[in-house]
Length: 236
Image (cartoon, rainbow, N blue to C red):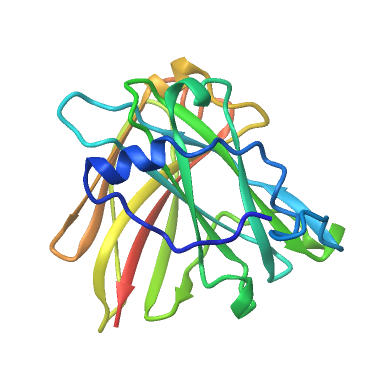
């Protein structure tokens, strides 16, 4: 089991490069004890969608992609991810954080990927859930609480050949701390390079709201389910 550390957003190039050099995961640790390496009893690995990570642009800091998932059983004991075939060359890394963590008996797990390479990639979130076969399928993410912050998550279905702008905000009496977004392809195999090139996702925080503009080509969502997640981290 990979421990569920706190989410560390990249604060400058040094932080980004540190994440980029992290050892790639192989999707095998989500149901193993962190210290002994032994399998955790009654733990089932549940896989999420393939999450697209945009390519680095010349004038931008390395782009990020976020995804939240949850266990139907209500208890996540670990997390890992499965890289696509190009991830080792691209240097994409994933940072994991708990929604509140199994230590507080919650199911939320989040993933953050950072890509410092000018070529898009994808990864598949994996979480270890207690409950064995009764754990059911991995959810698409929901609002979670972690200490003094709330992570509000909303999802939108994406269709081909469209450009849409969406917004998401905290609840009343909450202050927006930061925002992020991610697009998941619900397929068995990673999205192709052509599909990734036909997806453009840009997010910004403006006037207390997370605003995300998504442009999709003809192959994005044509024969598979593709969803956008918007994350708003809020503080009372």
